[in-house]
Amino acid sequence: MTGILGLAGIAHFLKPETFDSIVPPRLGNPRFWTYASGAAELGCATMLAVPATRRLGGSASAALMVGVFPANIYTVKKHWHSPRGRAIALARLPLQVPLVWMSWTIALGPAEASD
Image (cartoon, rainbow, N blue to C red; front, side):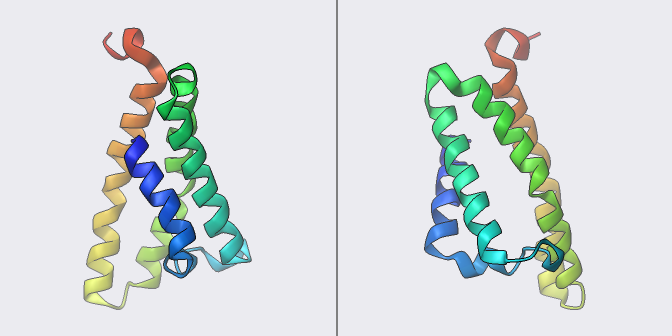
């Protein structure tokens, strides 16, 4: 999760236009949300990398994965009339489940996760 979030966070700053395009218009300024979510991903990655904050980082990462899900739904809606775009967007939706699960497993910590 640390690597996934770290790379994704960096990508938000290197190629922001890619992420701007999936921000639902009703949220306003897409660049703000692109940078904010990139910073949140980098923050979560940092917390996951530090043993003292790993469990908090897991909780924050799970919340972030749930929080960005509306952008994935918007992407499906946006690309609905493009068979290829729709297929890619639909394929991404279930990928959030293991990301939330992995994050939540980290949040529970070793003792609770193995129960």
